[in-house]
Length: 264
Length: 204
Image (tube, rainbow over all chains, first blue to last red; front, side):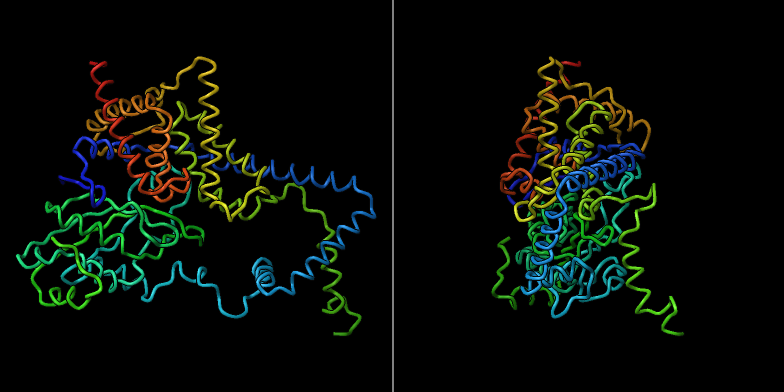
């Protein structure tokens, strides 16, 4: 594993790569009970805050209390007349939503294929393929940490689209002369499913392929990992395989004339 | 079922509702945290702790500061504006300030925060024992050297390697662009590399 890149424009010297690996290899062992202890303190603090608030409220004359309550009820009633506010109240109070759901709520975690179809194969067939991502064995996944692991790992929203993205980034010159390879990539999949900070962790030995893999990685869309039903950001590692020599691949970039692959 | 039955829905429900509303909570029951805060605590506590732990000398201090961060966040929950920043950004802003205050207090008292090499809380993930010993030494050297960097460099490296954040997340936290983050991480690593080399020479 040599000649590792950080971005498409910057190659790190070996010493820096080593330092990066060392820093990533540091485990921070949080005390097992720390989270529970801190939560108990926070709950106590929250309870105290509510008691104090109630004490303040008790000092207010009865007539003012009633006036304030009436004002709150009136505001609530008025707000129900505004559709977006009404929808917010409905969500807050747990009533089923009426009408079309907001796109932002639907997008994370939705896929056009079942996860077993994506995760089950492990590696796609084709001339340019991406293996299924797995969580990086990092601090967040260390058994020393009390927090639960994400319930799901990120997976590609549309494997076919991902494959096309990879094929489009395959430098045509390398395809023609039959040069391929596998590039190990690490990337942060944000809670919205977009990718951030892609890095090459296992070079193919061909700089252009490494750069192409980074470009392709930026274009991939994932359904994010979730914890407690909520999308969370997580680092994943996977391989991008450039496999030369089939007609299908050669036709690929030409059929997508709006997306010109970078010159090799 | 007659209408005078206590099971009659139209009679029982309002009474039950009022009773439930007025009934005091059982002693010792857990009122919990505000739902949003509970989720933030669950999702970000680990990252905040790791960020702090990267910056301070001992686990105890890291725990104190992490506790302070979440207590402060809970107390000022009303002032949080979701339109201005994401919860993670807000929490890390509080954490950065808390760490800065701690380091400032240390400097005022003439103390240096480089005892991290004595702390067993930072461990290696090396596979074999021999490798682990060597890597342990090397990591102590790296962390000791890191404590000699300027605060801004320590901060960005702690966000990357401690809190495990990506460039975009760090950018949101620091209020700079993702490209600037990449450049600053690269520079900070270069500085760290020089500091490690210097420290290594001094040790030899």
